[in-house]
Length: 230
Image 1 (cartoon, rainbow, N blue to C red):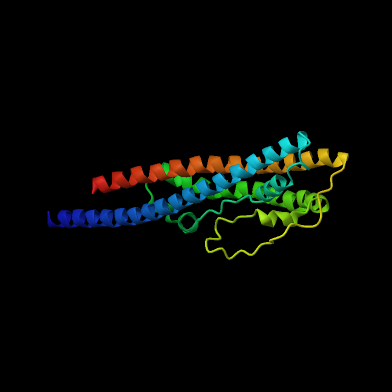
Image 2: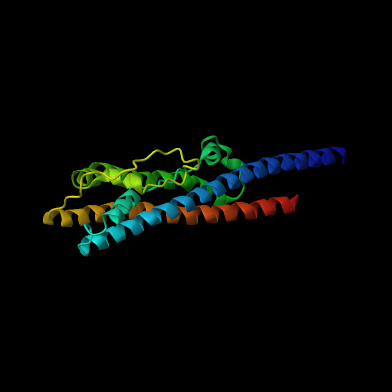
């Protein structure tokens, strides 16, 4: 009887240790995914403004209003270059996946989510790079030959510049925008292509947000289940 009781106590203690480890991992994971969710919301908000600016700029091109509202065009050109990339925090999740700690997590669905998480981020990276490359190598060279881009500094506002450290131009450029008839179609195509590439990033972020939200809910339910069983 004494041996059986000792074995039972040892088993109970081992279970407590494992539960404690699992709770610590799940709590850290929850914090990490909640942080990523906040970062995603911010990135989605900023990137939606880029999409709206592309659409508004296209409307001005098609209505032949570019020369009529140059200040508005300056602002929109700044906006379409203000796209953001979601930079996921993966310290905890990466460590769990790569160090063999997945076995500590008993929930199969959570283990599967973590296994897919890093792959999803890798798959989205290609679209982020393609958008940035197209903007730098195609759209910007077109704009630099035809628009006084320095005027954008008169309208530029950076939300992260809380203490107003940013120093910008105070006077307008003496140069004026220069667009030929052929340039208008090319300008529309350049804006469309930028928006097209940008749309892939936005859709990816929306899908990732759904994935992260569902993962957080899984973790919360599992934490309640473990805590209740103790």
